[in-house]
Length: 393
Image (cartoon, rainbow, N blue to C red; front, side, top):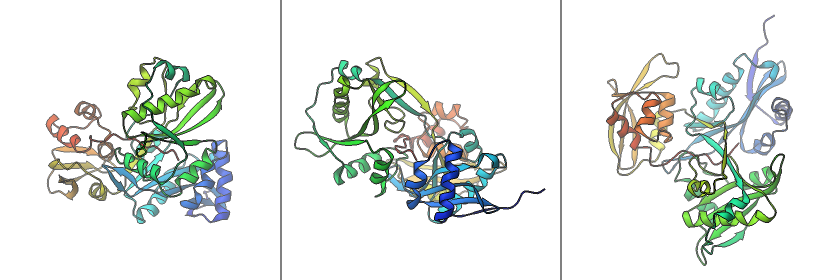
């Protein structure tokens, strides 16, 4: 008997309530963001015979690349009923979810997924590895940080929001956090306290959001969920502050989004000898519109580049010819008339766009095929900022 037709549609409240129950079954636990983010998202579900069998939400939240906010779609809370898996329904649903958001202006799309191989086959790529870090609280006191005398004040506020936004521009990938971000995080982590750091009488230069929690194997720990430091001195002040928990709490744990892939404070932390790292599934990026993504991204003002490129299509059956032009901080990807000096797959283009290739050798080993000078010129355009996504959704 042939399977009945699946319809993909925008979810009203009744359908979304049904999807909430499905997500709880599929993930084995309630998924808070189905409720918390639903009011801010495009909600799509797949329905067969009047029953919700899959779904997910999409958030139109810009992401910083090259210092500019690029219109992007963040894809969250997606799942398929266990009994419906194996028929590429996730692919069909995600394609429709993206189409709707692209029609609303998104040129990039981001998601977190444990199914990295599946996402790669659909054209997504991981710009960076993702780790969480932990160390004994006593290790911070043994490092003997000199307290730079910072003033520490509890609470967030507009000044802190401006600082985070300014610092986010220094990386490739962070959200331009929307107005609802703070309330969302407060519901996600109700026990989190945010602290502001500033030199005496000066502007705020750091933000630290932490919670004291029970861990099943490590006992009490200080969990760091958000950490932004404008400079080295502020970072030192934050670590010194975390060390003050040592009399009551055994471990400091930096959650997977709290520090960049190459932590700003890695040398200081490793010096203690007790730092451990755990690898997590990475965030994935997909460029929906190559030309618009290049046009809207920020570029180094000192780069002057004209480079023919060949980009392999998603189905790997053909190549598209372009000319990449970057000058005076502006980029253009124009249709080309001849085969480029350098050929990239769409996924390799995505990794380059996000600053994921940190050296010519790394790009070559990843399959970018061209002479070293050409590869070096290409990489120089995006290597100024490293990839990091500081929000998990």
